[in-house]
Image 1 (spheres, rainbow, N blue to C red):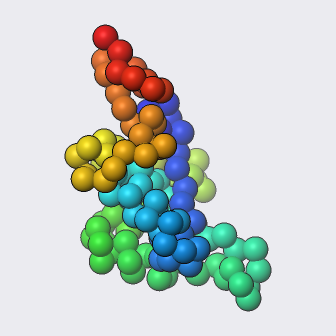
Image 2: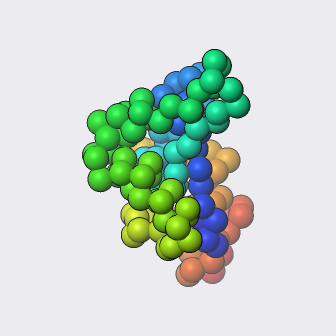
Length: 122
């Protein structure tokens, strides 16, 4: 993300459709402002239907309507229309959210503007 990559999470992961591990990661990433989009994983209409409403409702309840609109409406519209994404919050280090740092933490650690993979640098 610090290098301009965008993060998309499958809506079913966030609402628990793929189990508690996927849901926990999706919740953590959202808490740390690491999510730019929620999207369907619509391979078919029976087992993976293209439904975003349950995710939108859950994001709105947890983070507010403004965040839900940004992640599920405004950011996707910007991409479709080849426009810059609306301003969003900066990523938060896992140490500030109370979550245990995991394998993803190397994406969010920064010191003097540089991303470090395994340790802080001088």
